Length: 250
Image (cartoon, rainbow, N blue to C red; front, side, top):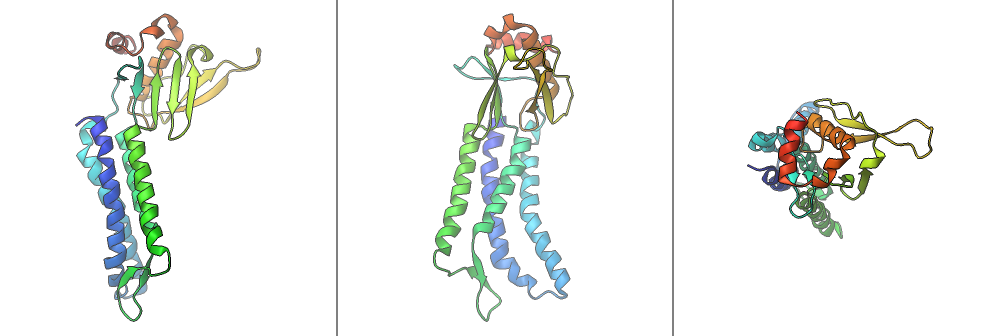
């Protein structure tokens, strides 16, 4: 299974989390009304709600276990002359499934008067909102997965961080040699930038690594390499350069 397929598989798991939580609300909640004492009923309800998220997050992790190890390499962007670190399925999966689970909270329900049953609320406009809000959330999530965000792009100009909405470029010439320090498993790399005013101390910039499908130590060494070897930057994005880079940075 490729990392892209693992990312796209997140969406049906998020939809399942939303559907499972709605089913729990409609059919399991009335069961808890008949459990005594009330404290035990509350624990049963919390356990059922948590299981809707945890079982699906564990299922996605198990299904994509072969691509959960972050690789010490780059993807080559076709026709873009750049190296890319896509969004990591191991990071994106739990967050997307959690968002799907939370979206189910926008579905309005109510107790049927005089009965131990739950139904969709009959308040004016409730049905439209119950459909529209989850649909918008799931559509936005599908867009994020298809557009592969967040991700990191390296080209001859510098390092581009593509977030959900914002795009930030760090130019190679802004970065100081000697960093960032390699740290396997770290959540952030600290890049040191040239100060805007000469004579002032370097400006630290944090680069999050946890959302990226690339080994943090390999990422740190790649950045260090291109900061210190500007003559190699024009070759970024080619298979020959990637084959040379991997042994060069260890």
